[in-house]
Image (tube, rainbow, N blue to C red; front, side, top):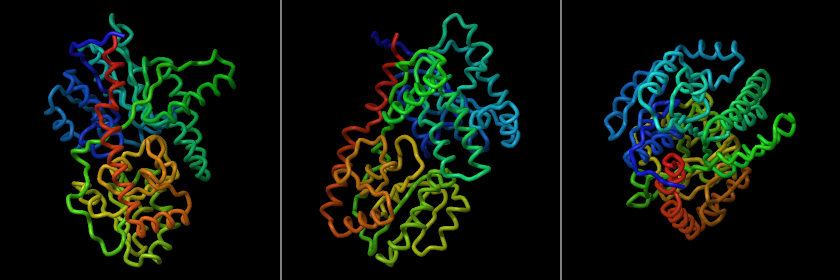
Length: 420
């Protein structure tokens, strides 16, 4: 394999402007783009927008070295989704598609002679499949797609816990997205998932489908790779002075209208919190993150629950807490919030699903729990055994520093994108 050292021109087709890096997929996409820009490559970002704030975000992104950014306002959401239904396509794909943005993408491809195009999520691969100019190019750019998570499995998880009519909606989405994921794998040069578990599950599902349909030989899928999430320890770090709370303070962070996050905190408060608050009457649970929906806001009726909504800086909330809880029951891929808690020096209590894809061990870096009784047991262990808290904190910080730098995690992306 030969690695070039010349500057490459790369198009990022993003499902959202990847700036500021303040939520899951934006953190991942921004750090990928910045990593490549810092190597000297030229990065053109094109994305749909839905708000005036995103125009400002795009303008700020353009100020960074080696970046450009363009956008198109999406049509109304009901129209997008109805169009998707009428065309029998995935609602996730329809939700991010715009004919005007397609024209902008095609114009950029035609005029810029890109060496590579990276789509950030399967939802925007349609801009490649619908391109009127891509196949006319003399030199084809390398096509890369960051699946991030295995979305088809996520929708199937939703369906398993839903009732009619949403069960039907989720099952439809799972089936259509699964077909779309297989199509991408066949037609793109490389695809990435956040964790090995996602790669293995995708390969299993794909080959199960091939075997069931008897449609083609087994697919080796050598173009599917793991591309893990990293952690910026300049933004997330332990408090200079350890917190001294009179009663335990727990925290959960995330976008609070995102179904896995909502499900996690609602389950934790409804199933675990009554016993916790009885055991620790002055305990507090901070739910920190933008867009809390009605189900989350309803949790304020419980004693000790604080819901922040959007905050300018999340770090101070990590620093005022004693413990991080990650009670996920619906999830795929690596949880950035768990890595952030590790980096901030917080002991983490998580379901096995919340720890999935992270190179951590139970009782060494993290404490695992699956039931309300287990969560209470792990909390009691931490409040009684300060040596255990110290052990978890130190081991998790070492893990972050040794294994989760963005430079190390993104090395496979550099190798693939610069390969000749």
